[in-house]
Image 1: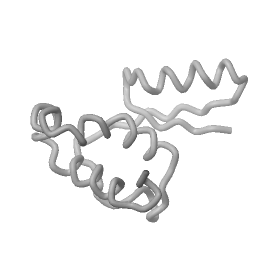
Image 2 (image 1 turned 90 degrees about the horizontal axis):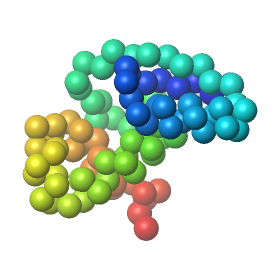
Image 3 (image 1 turned 90 degrees about the vertical axis):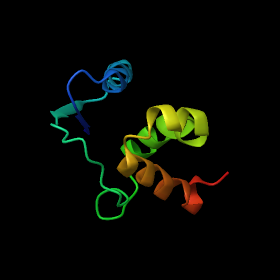
Image 4 (image 1 turned 45 degrees about the horizontal axis):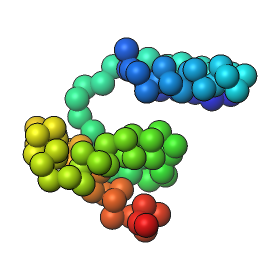
Length: 94
């Protein structure tokens, strides 16, 4: 069974639920309250999880383009550090 941790009104979570329904997979949804802070450590117990990859790959274009990063990410230095920590890993190099 898949456990999906999400916040309220998350369109990405809706996409995952639709895909899971299409694939006839069981999904346990856990709604989390986010305090606006991102831990700069990689995942839980330093393990990269699927959700880390999904979030990183979604935000990577904003992070990589200096104009977009200045507009959208300048107020979130912890998020920028988190994105950089993943981008520096050998698994994320292409």
